[in-house]
Each structure stands twice: as C-alpha cells, then as structure tokens.
Image 1 (cartoon, rainbow, N blue to C red):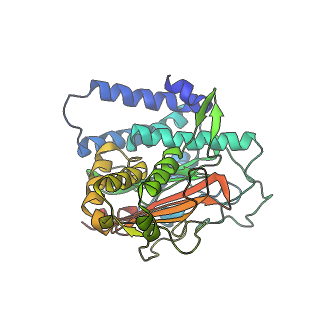
Image 2: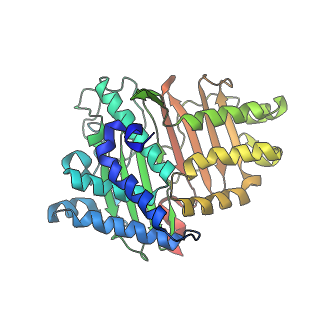
Image 3: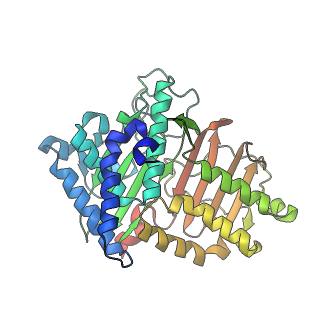
Length: 362
C-alpha cells in the first residue's frame, strides 16, 4: 500500500516530503548515516522552507532562540490556546509542503508517520463535530477567554510551525511544530538533536481511513499492556501504584517540575522484560531521526538499572490505564483522558535536557 493510500486526508501535503526522503535514502552512499549529515539535511530543508516565504511570513515564523515562544506549546485546540508562528491553513500548497518537508527531515520515517496519523485524526475529529472530552492541561499562553464555545477549531489547517534561532549546522536552534494533540519540539545543536519536551496525543485513538484502521498510539498501548502482563504477580505488586493516576503529571506548563520515581525498578526485571521496557520507550524516542534516536536509546540502556516503570489502572488490554517510564534522563507518561479510551495524552521529557539544555551549555 502506498503512502498516498495510507494518509488520504493529507496526501497532498505529505507526498512530496515522504517521496523526497525516500529518494535521498535511495541515492545515499551505502555507509552508516551520520548525525552531521542529518543536521545538514535539516538545515537545507529549513532554508528551502524559508525561501518560499514572504518577508512578513518570515517575521511571523522566526523567533529568538531564548524567547518565550520556547514554552508556547499545548495539547489544547485553537480557540482555547493561542499558538504563534505560521498556521498551515494560511499557507499556499508549496509553502505547506516545504513546512512539512522540514518536519519530516528532522524526524524518522516512522516518527513522521505518527505525526501525520495524529493530524489526520484531528481532521476526523473535526468532521465528526469536534471533541467532547477536552484535555485539562494547557500550559502557558492560554488564549484570553478560552473555553468551550469560544470558536474552538480542529483539523489539518490548525497546525503551526515556528523556528527559534536561525537554522544552522553549528549554532543551536529549535523547530516547533504542533496543534491540537501534538507538540513536537526539536532542538538542534551541531550534529546532535533532542526532541524533549514533546507531546504526541490522539483523539480519536482509533479511526478508519480508506478502509484501513489507524491507531496513532496503538503500539504505545499494546506494548505497555504486554509488559505489565509479562511481570510476575510479585513484580506487578511493585509496579502498580496504590493510588489512581488519571492525567499527565508533567504535561504542558510543568517545565522544571520534579517528581520522585515510583513503581518497579528495571534492575528487578529479567532480560526479556528489560528489552520490552526499552522497546516501549522507543515509541517516543524513535520519533526523532534515526541517528539521534540511536544515541538516546544507548543512553536509556546505560541508565536502565535506575529506570522505573509505574502503572495505574486495568491490566487487561482494552481497559483504562495510566503508565510512566522514569529514569535519570527520561520521563514518559501515557494517560487516557477523563475515562475516555478514545482520547489519549502522552508526554516525553528529559529532566536534564529539555529544550536541549545540555547541548546549549556544552
């Protein structure tokens, strides 16, 4: 099945970026890809995007690296939360394609697919009349008078892109892309890049397009239930919290907040269970480009003995459950919203390196 069939709602928007990636990989020398090469491709994609814009549009999309725009992200829809940057719905087709080509260049193929699945889901939500259960977290920058009935807007047009700092192969800069149920923040500093904090979410959690069932966060659900059920009864006693958690603890607006690790420590897991835990974490880590994701997975593996897995809720797949993966350099949370299995929020953070804090100071 072609990618055009996979994402019919936004095939016009994403066919060129995906095709370009495929051609680049096919033409690349048969050597291991380099992080520096990835950065060069992302910078080239950013420059190509900026070249399509008018002076006024460039002024809207460009921000200072240390500006307050850095924390201006949320899970909330337009009409409740005011984003800055360029709105996809305000861009002509060529400019939209260039914007998405930049996002695709910074992410892995699977990561970009996940992003577009989330976006397509929001278009489905719009066509179904909009969300009836709303996320309660919004973070800084909430629009004035935000609330139900305040011109809330869903769909593919309501995603924004902003660049913090000038695209550079050496100096740090950030790609900020998001809208309802999506916030992707990629900090690039030389050959290294990080994607924390980011918020991939989904509503609906399952939908049908062109006869195909799409679950944007399906693997995040299924792998987690497989892991909790791979634990022994004694291990489950350690992993399952003795109180209910029903929302993200470190969601939007919670930058810098510290929480204590809970649940079962990975050192108490056997080899297969540890691999399952790492594989689950990769669903977030692997959204970023392959080279950066490989570095992050190596870091997570090195810190695995000090990593915890916590669970709250049902243990049978299909039930309502929250879980958290927490280690020295990672916090991942998965939280169905307000008892609705069709409305999922997640968060991916690095308490030591959100917004590339470590990369900038090196």
